[in-house]
Amino acid sequence: MSAHPLHPPYNSFNSSGKAFHNIVGGFECTPHSEPHQVSLNAGYHFCGGSLVNENWVVSAAHCYQSRLQVRLGEHNIGVNEGTEQFIDSSRVIPNPDYDSWTIDNDIMLIKLRQPATLNSYVQPVPLPRSCAPNTSRHLVPLALILFYPYFLQCLNIPILSDSDCRNSYPGMITDSMFCAGYLEGGKDSCQGDSGGPVVCNNELQGIVSWGYGCAEKDHPGVYTKVKLNNFSNVNIYLNFLIVPL
Image 1 (cartoon, one colour):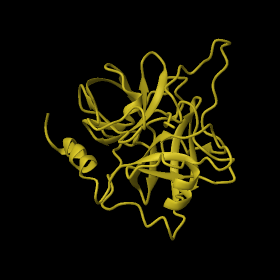
Image 2 (cartoon, helix red, strand yellow):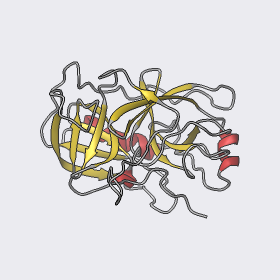
Image 3 (cartoon, helix red, strand yellow):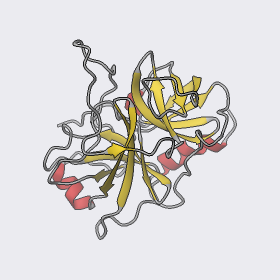
């Protein structure tokens, strides 16, 4: 059995012209309260991402396109609010250890062609100083931040224990992944949310990656860990963020 992206990149409208639904069970974020959130655009919003400094964005590797535009300072992606910055990519770099079959190491860096202008609408999110808390003992509230389908949406979900995560997807969870959500279903990220941030204690702890359906019972969302104590490839890869390129 292979993993499949939980939220494949998509055009915001289907053939009937109706907008796809993204986040399930969330609420509209306070406008511009999540200034690190970006929209990846190729003529349409297809994935999310997180600004981590004025030059770099982190997203999911399965969102890869060789050329894309990063849209920052958005709240309603359906209109021009006057707060946006549209910046083309100069480099799009999937993790070299990304496996498109298992979705392992599903993380990607995007170098902006020009630095973002930091202001009250555009700010980076800190990378984690340590890994997420021990999920075998605690349910830790996370903020999941996504577009649906125009307005930025927020969702508070718990980290699940490693055993619950692996039992939900036998043989499919790697050390670079964690699960979050509710085993009873009802709240989850969904189509078009890939690459978006999962924030814990005001630090970027996860990236929307894959799963089975949307908000289905016993199938929580699966997220890429941004930092791992014993998984050097991710840490080495993230060092690109502080090395001038």
